[in-house]
Image 1: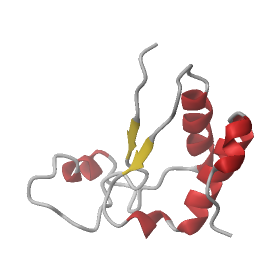
Image 2 (image 1 turned 45 degrees about the horizontal axis):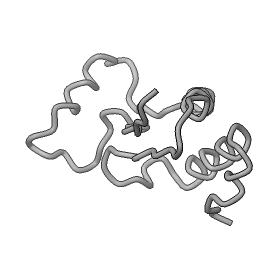
Image 3 (image 1 turned 90 degrees about the vertical axis):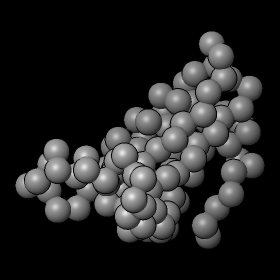
Amino acid sequence: MHPFSLLVKPTSADCNLACEYCFYLPKKNLYPETKQHRMSDSVLERLIKTYIGTQQGSYSICWQGGEPTLMGTDFFSKAIEFQKKHGSARASLLPSFE
């Protein structure tokens, strides 16, 4: 398998920047009954577990979608914990929000 990186939008179309060129903002109209769109912990864990399950020399996740803290620091702490849980011994080198 060729190495690849992920570009993840955990806040979906709830970006607070509203750039004129953004192709993603209209996607919020797909779910009019939902006012706030956030990636759940179960989806986050599955994403990380599946990605780390691929055979690569290194892994890269870029978080996109406006101000990253729209998800809150707890979300990113969970992402790190899931990387440690599903990763190799190298996971202990990951940063922490503690």
